[in-house]
Length: 441
Image (cartoon, rainbow, N blue to C red; front, side):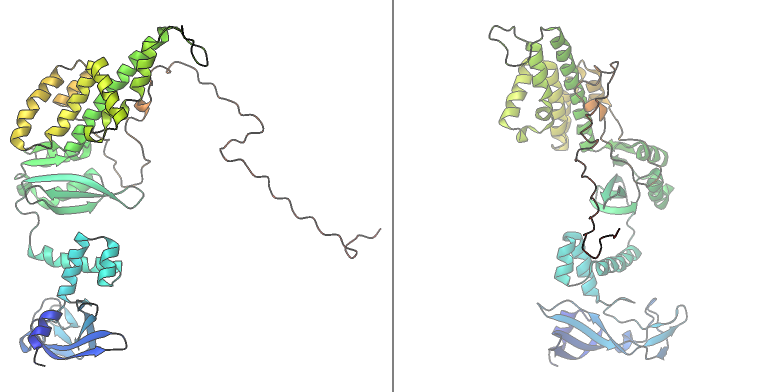
């Protein structure tokens, strides 16, 4: 062949000799017959040490190479065995593929890169392999990367967070490097033991070099960081800071709603149906009704408000300055995290003044040092029931019915105890009476 160097580059078989290239029309596969160079032969497949030959092995075998357009390409060569002093009898190493792998280096690296850039179906359909094969390839590539570089070297500013996958509350604890913006460590679990495993791997000397740690404010993360990195600055992530401000804003809204409800009880009651034309007005009741539907107008970003929600927000700014000031504090905190550092420092001054002037203690804590946590250390990686934070407080008036007696409402006999009506049990079919089955007297 005259284009041997071209075929070596297309197939990714360096340090090899291309003997011939064939095209199998039956299965539509391009097969390249190659052999290692003299210096690359008779080496252990594990340690790459030159070893004496043992036998011919299982004969010739094939490795999957990158497709040439729509044509599938494979590399075929002998697979002899060698006797290594350290690893015993193993298959000899080949320069175009890893030991105990059925794909070339170029194929493995392409699949590993695609797995980080595309979805599962795209990788499997484009490379024409199974998803389990993708996992095996990533394991091999990552083993080589981890053996050649230290991912934990030079860590200064890190971020700790968890991510859920699949169903049943399965979590991965991930550690990122803020300086390089790369993932440096991940492990299954969402407990203090999982976080401690990372710091054990990091070591006390490297832990002392950590200057900043960002997390979501969980107790078990904060405790481990304070113990292992006492000199590091602990930083809360912007999402939870804004969430805490939003929770405090909702407390102010519920307080205003309860005050309006209390005033509405002192107003003259109306009967059922449409009120008369000369009926006295009930401004407190109307204000309570308006505040009840103002939750999403206060929660959503200004760019996502509808016309009715914008009108509701304008009404709050006119009628309730305290609630509107709390809304401005929440929006101020949200905008601060979107600005550059110098502009954010200048923008924080009016936000601090606004928070200090708020009469509500909950909002003052949010503006200064409010650090609520999502919950205690789960302790074990087991499925937990889904619980929404402050679920009881989401009711509009949780405190007005604490001392009242709740009477069960008896259902009528014809109504079942659940939503769907019960079907009557099927009756057994009556036997057909014929002249043969009639019982004689």
